[in-house]
Image 1 (cartoon, rainbow over the protein chains, first blue to last red):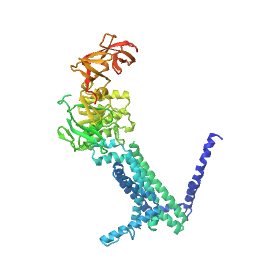
Image 2: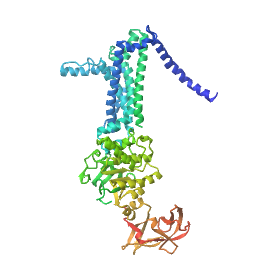
Image 3: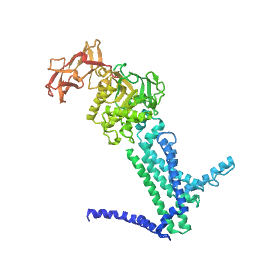
Image 4: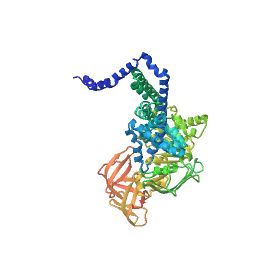
Length: 271
Length: 353
């Protein structure tokens, strides 16, 4: 056997797995999406049909809000945790990263315990104001769930990036007269930009596609994964479900690519 | 440089010690005055506290309670670095990777709200002064080590600091470049005339750049003096051996002579000492014919260095003696020679404790 054919033989398992679990289902999904009464135009339904469009808009808004708030919270927390040593720090980090172990269903359950009809927040507001505050079953509950889900991942990435920061850069900026705010703006945040893009992308993609939490909270929250589920199981509308799935994938991919290319220049400039 | 002609601030640190949170003492309480326009070098091996002292002056570290830092008589101890108006050059240079060369140099001026036009003028002036024309729009990762060093210096000087602080600015460079940049840096510092505090572990850097040198050892000041004072009249064995090469001789002194295995060497000392420690620099020993000098020994080895040759001689003292002889002297290993030393070239050191 020649060296070359040996290498090709070694690639065979990868090719089989790729074909079986990636290429074929994807192709089938794309074909199914075009198999509805409207044919290929079914793909445009995600933009033309008002209900789908509103859902898409909701989903992107939710994912964007989740990403931004996650980045803000995780950056401040991550920077603090990396730069300070205090008793209980290790325990705190372990607790913060604990949600990594939970599936979406459990996160949804916890949101219901917190903000559901029998939830802690409801009890508390009932005693204070005589009115039960319940938001677990709405998009706000979902937002809270996604935050809880995303913050640990992002915190770990940010902490690793902060550890690699050259503290001399901050000292140099201070020696040149920069206030603490200016140091963050001109030195620290630009240096962390690659970490923001990498971890923000994960948070965004998770929030776009996560299903377990949404399903646990309610079946009538208008986000794309829920819409796909209802079209598929309740309405048995296979072609629409497939078209929406492909649309969800493409839009997520497109926004991530956009973020990456946008930061690409920033990353390159950051050396 | 006299106090009248210098620029910048006079610095005084008083009883400044530093104990870190884990209890290690990085710096024993030290007091030091630095004149306006003076270049002071903090010299010592790693871990001697020189960088800690620099960081206390910069405002990056707080001295232990009781310590005080003042610039031109004004107490600065509680003033953070961003308001001390110090220019600092770091060992890693710490140039901002997200800014170009000119943005780096102009950063301190931008923070101070200097207008674009004035800033561009000042940056152009420093680019010319530090010899980096043509690199203005480069990114930092496109610069060589020597270029980075110049940008770091230009950035520190751009804000017209009262004090310039340099933390091993040449250590990251290779040897040939280091020598060239050292004399360039020396010219530049003389031209600027700013009060400069320069940290290094390299004694030749310290000699060339310093108006005065502070030799530090284990968190304490071992000696302060001009390069000549430090070299010719070291106050301890540590200083003698750290600066230049030194022969350390332990022997008794009787009737104005050092009693050595190789003979009786005259010395300026009236009292008899049973165990004295003396320092003799290698270049102060002259090679003479055997028997023609008060000391004699046998050549162990000869290394020809070019401008001079280094002889290692045994039999003079308990230890080997090093001589820097002119390159014209004929010397072969195994030969007996005489060693002629002027009594005023011998420096008595306090015995080690």
